[in-house]
Length: 392
Ligand SMILES: Cc1cc2nc3c(=O)[nH]c(=O)nc-3n(C[C@H](O)[C@H](O)[C@H](O)COP(=O)(O)OP(=O)(O)OC[C@H]3O[C@@H](n4cnc5c(N)ncnc54)[C@H](O)[C@@H]3O)c2cc1C
Image 1: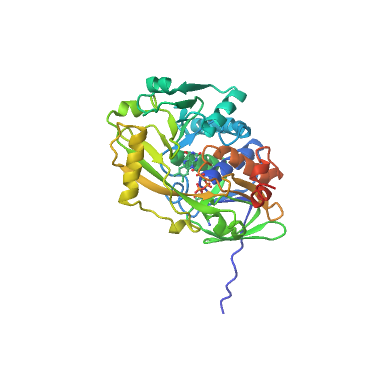
Image 2: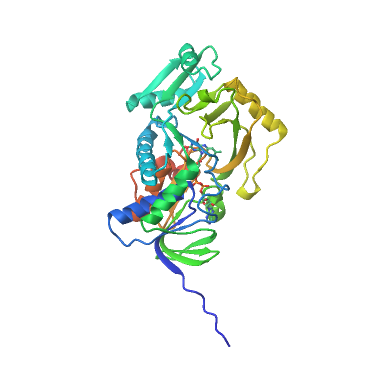
């Protein structure tokens, strides 16, 4: 009789589960630490799809990058550090990952987010401009500006190219010694006392430490987090302007536009013919990313076009393309960056529509947690204790 023995598990020091936005940056940070210390740290990424795919939170051509943090001034140093790392990764990959177009926020006077960013810029002495409605009309004639609007331009901001960024970080990590298993699904994680056993569709892995960066799939892999995480869906849409030259990065920054009854964000034209304008469309949250709505109705597309034209009157209101993407959402939109499993499993989740700009720094925070158990980038607001009791 032939005896079938269970194949031995592969053994690594740190495994990163989910090599999307934050996971690719964690792999890059770990492999950089490996190279700098000339260590033999065994680092393995495990990704259920390919290097760049359309299922996760990171696709859609561009992500707004800001430095003056409207989410809280204390997050500005993380964004300054992220900027340095975006530029470094772009240099290493010989790709323009961060398009330095700046980012403008236009809103009715006194908007709290605009003023939070303005005070962050003042506190950290960041280059910026503050416009009244007349200045805005002169400087940015593409926008419809209402009497009483004001604008804040974050000059160190810009637009990140997300597909290229994930590709670049993954490849850089591999060049520095990390391995990645693509098209491999992680099905369970079990602490063993000395590490974590990872079951995958391609066999078992034993890791000293596991970093979980599974984005919208996190609660499915770590069910204990399901009461803190939902899957939010965001729609992106692109429109054709009458004169494309006014919508190229040399003349149009990344932007946020508030009207009191509507928030929108977007980016200058990257494809050279259309501009991304994404008015916030309320889409249902879901527990399972696979069950998210993938199509928009004629009525939703018409609403997006009407709102886009409200921002830029010269746009044709018919979207030339559009897409829907999931992100993991926490109740107060603060990310979760913390450890469980006696410190052997680090988690980053709940990026809440805001995680891309921070990604290289959150990747570093996870690498720090895996290698030393603590990180200067981990904030008390990111802990599981905060999310379990946000006002406590
Ligand atoms: C439409 C949209 C617009 C946005 N705009 C901005 C913006 O302008 N600026 C900004 O800063 N942020 C923005 N965000 C937010 C930002 O893009 C996300 O917060 C960020 O991409 C989340 O990264 P993540 O690593 O958590 O998830 P992902 O990038 O989705 O990575 C998760 C990865 O884990 C893999 N995975 C999951 N489960 C498993 C498993 N069991 N086994 C193996 N692999 C697995 C997935 O396949 C995926 O590759 C936006 C988000 C969306 C959706």
